[in-house]
Image (cartoon, rainbow, N blue to C red; front, side):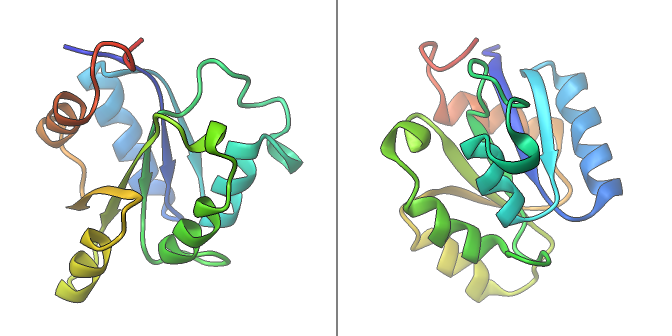
Length: 144
């Protein structure tokens, strides 16, 4: 099984982040897992700015990013808009997955129309889902 350097969870729900971190740890698919509570914090984290300055020293960098849709300050869609404007060096080799409880079929359709989104999944994350994502989207060069 391939193992990634790190995964970033972007979700404002603390219990969900806790559960997903446990699943990632038990699946043993990443060396590190980081969490932030909204899209704005995710952008700051990826840029290593503000309160995240020096906390995401590269490498390892979050190579797989799970983003919720409904969050305060900057939701998942707004995150994607801001992410597009990041330097290519920050976006390179990174995969973004929408991971949400949204029951709206239009959200899935919208995500599938976004070139930055590699997949759309419903919460909660499962070990099987995680392993499938890594097998399907990462080769040995992007693994740890």
